[in-house]
Each structure stands twice: as structure tokens, then as C-alpha cells.
Length: 115
Image 1 (cartoon, rainbow, N blue to C red):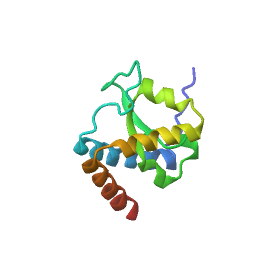
Image 2 (image 1 turned 180 degrees about the vertical axis):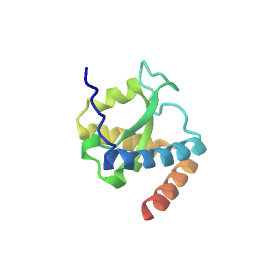
Image 3 (image 1 turned 135 degrees about the vertical axis):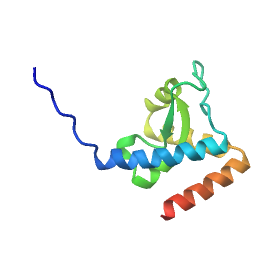
Image 4 (image 1 turned 90 degrees about the vertical axis):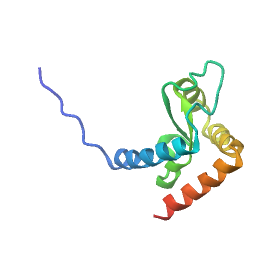
């Protein structure tokens, strides 16, 4: 049986790895360590990942930084929605964060996107 070779990491995957590392540090220092959506059936602090404004294939590089923390079931729940609804949900969650986190978030984005 022949072994198939895995494809090399693409540009988008490499870029996401760098962004993800920065987001993890920001979210931990801001105290965001559980699912921000909390829908029924939420796993709360298990299998967490970042949910973005848009479907991944439609994201521009700078939009990778705009995300919320969500468990897999909650993320799946918004992922099946039309992109406009998903965007509104993510934006609403970001806007509802307390003022201190909001200020840190703005500073984080400004520093990160200015580089």
C-alpha cells in the first residue's frame, strides 16, 4: 500500500497559526477562558476554538483577529447560519464584553494590525 504524502502547510494555514497564537495570549490575559456564546448544550470550557465574523473562506487576513471564544457545539450552531447572521452574533458578543476587556481588545487590534 502506498503512503500518500501530506500537502505542505499553505500560506493561509501558516498565517492562521501565527494569529491564533496571539489570540490565545490575548484571551487568556483578558480572562476569557470559557465559551462566550453559552447556548443550550454548551460545553462551557471544553473543546474551545475561535469563531470569526465570517466563514473562513471569506475572511480577509486582518479579519482573522476579530473572533470570540466558543465551544464546538456553540460554534457549530452559528457556523450553519447565513454569514450576515453569524457576523451579527459575533459582533454582539464582542460589544457585550466589559469596558476593560473592550479597551484591551481595541489596543490589541491596533498594535497587531499596525505591524
